[in-house]
Amino acid sequence: MKRIIVLILIICLLYGCDKTPQPINYGTDTCHFCQMTIVTKTHASQMVTDKGKQYKFDAIECMVNFLGDKQELITKSNLLITNYKKPGIMINAKTSKYVISEEITSPMGANLTGFVSLKQAKTTINNPTAEYLDWNGIFKKLN
View 1 (cartoon, rainbow, N blue to C red):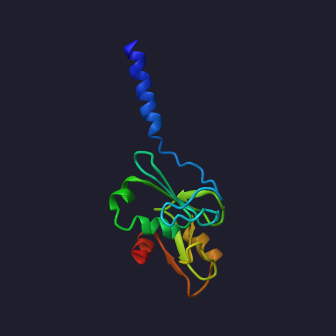
View 2 (view 1 turned 90 degrees about the vertical axis):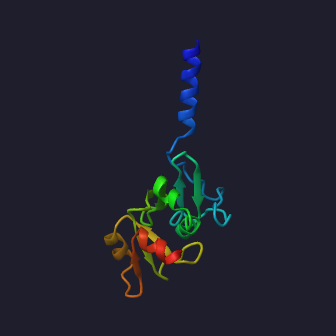
View 3 (view 1 turned 30 degrees about the vertical axis):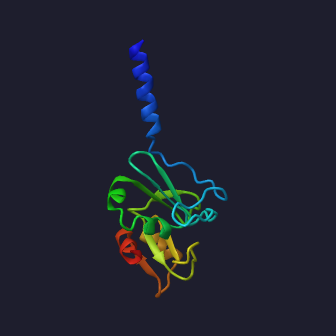
C-alpha cells in the first residue's frame, strides 16, 4: 500500500513540473510584464522555467525586458517566440533571428519581430535601415 502511495506522489510531482509550453489563449491571457491582453499572434512570446512555471508575453520585447536582470532564468528556461511567418507557432528564442524595422510594428512599439532564420528575416524585410540581430543582440540592445 505504501508503494502505491509513493508512486502516486511521484507521478503528481512529475506532472506538476511539466515543462511543455501551454498554448497562449489569444484575447484572454495577459502579458506577465505589461499586463496587456495578448492578442497579436505574430509577436507573442513565452517562457517556461525549469520548474514548469509558465510566463506569457504579448511581445518579444516584454519577455526581453522581463529577463533584463534574471540571467539564471535565461539559462534554465525554455524561451519561445512566435515565428512571424507562421503566426501562433512558437520557436526557440535563443536560436531565432530578429529584425527591428518600422515595416512591421510590434505590440509594444519596439518594432521587433522574430524569424526562424536570417534568410527568412531578410526575405521578409529587405530594407537598408532594418537591424538584423540574434538573441544576444536583441538582449543587449533592449537592456
